[in-house]
Length: 267
Image (cartoon, rainbow, N blue to C red; front, side, top):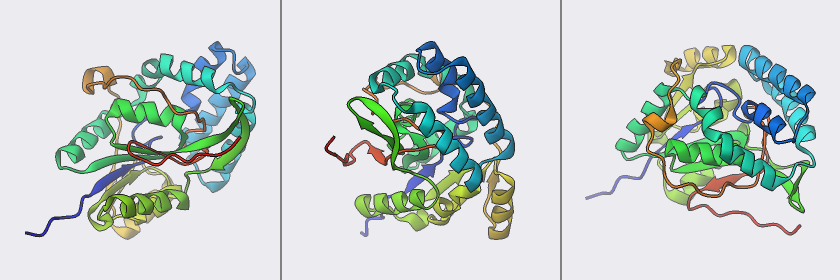
């Protein structure tokens, strides 16, 4: 009997699983922790508004990436890790889509790996993925020197890089991409959606909606928030990885969490 190749369901995070930019959502906790000023919080709120209302085309993404790269330069990694761990439920719970949580569960029941592929940094994506029960996380990383972010980007999991990460995972884990699924809200993730046999547009921006219509891709609308504590059995907490980026805007360094090879570099 021929054994079928494993399959996966690849999810973008921001505006696909959660209703906002994941990292921008932590602006107030970062202010309370002494990392950013009130003015920076207001700028982050404005960036969040632009991201939510106007979508995130390549130009907007680049502006947000630059903004966040400059903002986090000099931040202490341990402090960021602590703030995210302490405030994760308070920040993330109200903005997770119930429909996304249900879809993740359906894919896992069908025997597929659930992989979150996000331009946001691992500091936010990895613990969020753990809460959601994701099997793997591919996220971005900022350069760290002497325990602090330099503001430089090691690796940006964005646009074509998402598709490349999916193909690398497929080669490593034997996924049949033709039988796999992908979900995203943004036209910038068209390469990721194109890499699988079952792409889906979720709350799509205008350009992705047009593309989905022309390609015959299903369009899903997620609207209902859910409390993760009530919906998802939580595994034991693990240390978060040291990286930070902007959800849907900034990212830094590629990290594959759960049975993945972590890159090492000399500081």
